[in-house]
Amino acid sequence: MRPAAIHRPLNLRLRAASLGAAALLAALPISQAPALAQETNQPPAPSAVTHPYAPHVADAARRFGIPEAWIWAVMRVESAGNPRAVSRAGAMGLMQIMPRTWAQLRARHGLGADPFDVRDNITAGAAYLREMHDRYGNASAMLAAYNAGPGRYDDYLSRGRPLPAETVAYLARLGSITGNDSVVEVAVVAPPDRFAWRRSALFVHTSAATTEADLARPKDEIAAADRPTAQSAVGQLSSPNPPAATPIDSIFVPRAGAGRPQ
Image 1 (tube, helix red, strand yellow):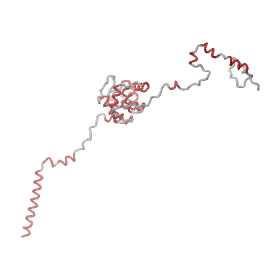
Image 2 (image 1 turned 120 degrees about the vertical axis):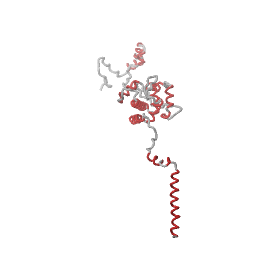
Image 3 (image 1 turned 60 degrees about the horizontal axis):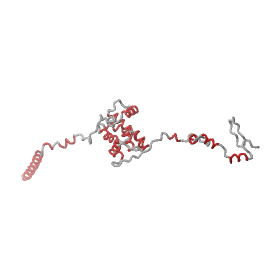
Image 4 (image 1 turned 180 degrees about the horizontal axis):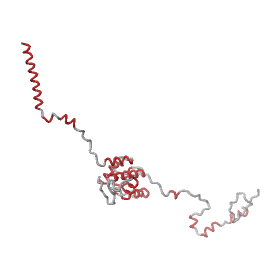
């Protein structure tokens, strides 16, 4: 009988512990019970919202071999992301392409008819950035020509004509590309001289060739200069072997030893 007395209190203690644990679980808020399951079953939250222009920017950057950051920065400064933007000068769309430039880029790269189409406008802008970079050799010159036009930028290079204030401010706003947020220095590679051939030595000048100075001299002065002086005439007469006279109608150049006895 004594062993039974020993086991009965132990069973009671185990049963009391089980009831206490059940009561503790029941006291917890119902919403906390399935919390772990909910976290496990939920899909991972996206790291960032994808911009609707992102696929087109990535495609254009890959196609023309330029950083995506360049396209985003130019788009932000040019149009503030407005695909229907039109400037006072007539530049169109996200990348603010001028009508004439758009027509050239459209034909060159097989773009559509709508300059405001997001994909085609971004593609045209990226193509133009690459063209300007290839032409001038650095990012600052590329952006200056993109904004002011290559003709205007060529004037800056060849004649020292100052860039428009708008272009200087434009470069300052794009310091993330040029690498300088304050003072903008446009280091450039001068374009090839289209008129260099005019200064090349295409023809051999001889001593007898008529110069521009000769053409400007009076005829009587030229005639006087061509007449032999008295001293030279005496020298010719006293020469033991005067040169033989060349026939007027001869078409051959006399040899150095012609007229001399062999």
